[in-house]
Image (tube, rainbow, N blue to C red):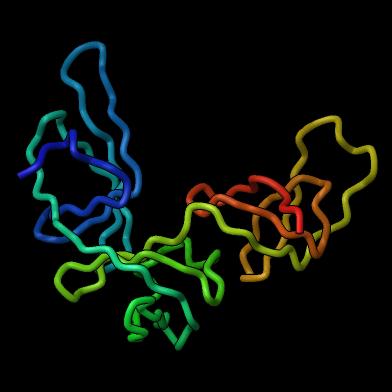
Length: 187
């Protein structure tokens, strides 16, 4: 058995007889009373995200997983097809397993898939990806007094807010966890 001090992002734990992946966690120290961990966890089977509070030092049932490198190939209905980079075996994974980060997944992107025995628990999309802007309104020259953002449609169909100087055809780097623009990539 592990304790709450072993929490880390993407760690797996068994809670209420179901397996959850830790999306976010924060250690909170209160003025009165004990410290606790506030967590956001994704149910591996349903994809539903719940919030929960664990007392600091509480014992939890962590699930040991094996992680393997895969490459995303294509979407087939409600499933995504991935290829193992070691033996070229293809597997089908339900789309809800990835969650919202599916919007930033493009063909031939390398991912890490977590398994419990041979059951897929989660798909870890890279934290930073480079995507091309396919549609956005042109920025006005000289309109730089404040940090103004505008919506942009990316090659995967995702829409995020970008600075005014970003134009159609630009390659940008973004954070898939916070869904925010990082920088424009030089080609």
